[in-house]
Length: 132
Image (cartoon, rainbow, N blue to C red; front, side):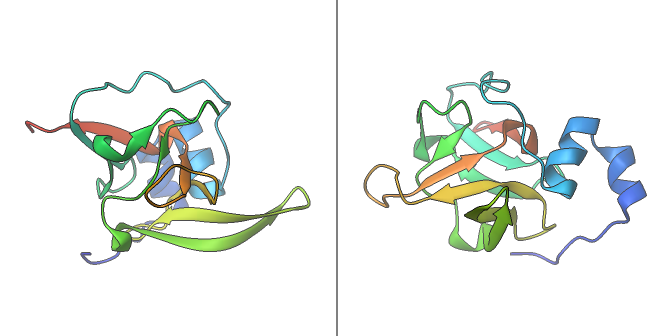
């Protein structure tokens, strides 16, 4: 992974939409089924904040939860995790390893081969087609 990116809150606010700022910088969550417009073509899902490649279309699956779901990150070093305690729940938060953007959560109820479900906020990522 390349050098980490650090910006002030004001710099992030200028760069991001209000919802993307709330989700990625303030650990928010977008409403379920609000970001289901990602293409089905081959490509990569990159961090909306710093452009780091995070997930591949090849590992994406329909979890039925209303959020983009993947069974593995593109590279284990692309994302980091930490324990989150919010609303009286204990969950594993997923963040971009390069800029610490909050992406979503990972759960142990995904498909083979990993058994994991990386449940991501669509607004935290942008789709980059394979041919770019």
